[in-house]
Image (cartoon, rainbow, N blue to C red; front, side, top):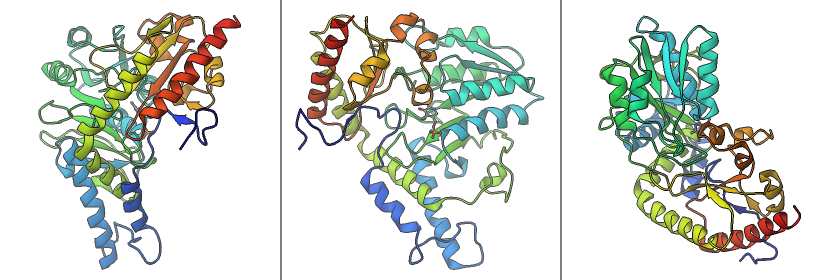
Length: 390
Ligand SMILES: *Cc1c(COP(=O)(O)O)cnc(C)c1O
């Protein structure tokens, strides 16, 4: 039991940065490491142990494919969503030069898209950067305006990692296809939070991550549609693994862990979402008495587990310090080393001063009502303390 005065660990409200591995997935991971276990190389064709390891990898491939309505043969293992995004954008654009040199994406994508698109610009490709609305969403009309005859690919995220805003992926994919372009979505934050079905939503490429969905870090996947076939050029060359799209010995334990985590998510996403929606309500109603709180997250078309709030007149970094017993983030984990305001908040038109006063709270499967109560107490105290010393 944690007490209000001295918790043994900080209260973890940073699930959008990473989730803990579900103990059931961690158990599965332990089976593929040591000498008395199935540690063999899944690419070894010359002995039984290799085939058995391959079966483990293929079962996980089915589990991940099932989560998004894909065929297992459409799943390419990567080291995470960062690599999947690189493979989707660079691999697709290089392989489809004759289709066109133009890419459309948005300014509030994860850095793994933003920086990859910039790298493509320096390679001679052209990028149109869409500015989403205050609600963090890109509309199909906006996308239509940006489409050109030489647009080869559109990449727009399913769920924004700082705001929680949800894009209408099916409608956006439809616009891309009207113009003969392919559609990619970064769905790292979306699995188990919104419905994902590559067939119904007509998606050509999907990036996935293990560790945003209670699986391990260092593993992810890219869905690459087979009918009609989407062509992607490899970025990592070697033994020709993953049908030539991504070489490298497959990490059986990581893959099995991600597979199990995704299967668990499929079983319990409704329970998770109900639980988390209650926590969000509890958190918001607990802040009703505090003046000068502005929600950066939209109220509609938003996942319940991410809540981005601005505290007027309070410096976000100072608030982070004052809240040392609560693990939260001022932006995405990737830019927390710098004092620049979040480019995502600026990207949706948040004034600089408010962006610098903002924190992202994100909840998850293992967050408890008592964690929220405790965090609220600390937060109210910290905000009024910082405002008093202004
Ligand atoms: C975390 C995250 C990534 C990066 O995933 P890794 O598996 O850590 O490389 C990419 N996009 C979004 C939206 C994310 O939240």
